[in-house]
Amino acid sequence: MSYLIQNRFTYSAISSNTSLILNYYYSCTGSITLTLPAVNGSRAGDEIKVKNLGTGTITINRTGSDTIDGATSAALGVQYQMLSFVSNGSNAWEIN
Image 1 (cartoon, one colour):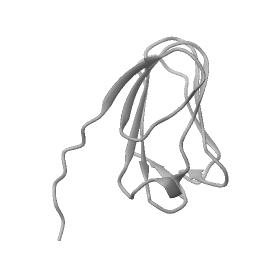
Image 2: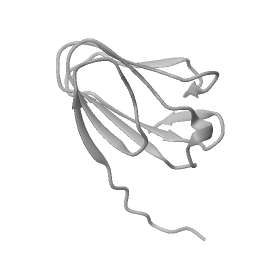
Image 3: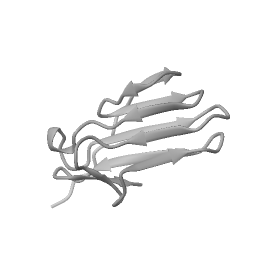
């Protein structure tokens, strides 16, 4: 059985290096580095959204040996670009 669940996100505007929190929507400016939380502390389907509102590069790093679509990091280098990171609940973040 599947259920439609409406995700609710907490909004946060940031411009400095930050450790990310589950179910947040981040609007970012500047060239900063963000760190995803460990996947094993999340449930499958937990999500984090990151949007680049400036002209800098936003780098998103993993924690530990988690992967981000098979890689160790992801980047938002274009203004208004957005990525959504979805936990598999085990060892990886998938980019949606």
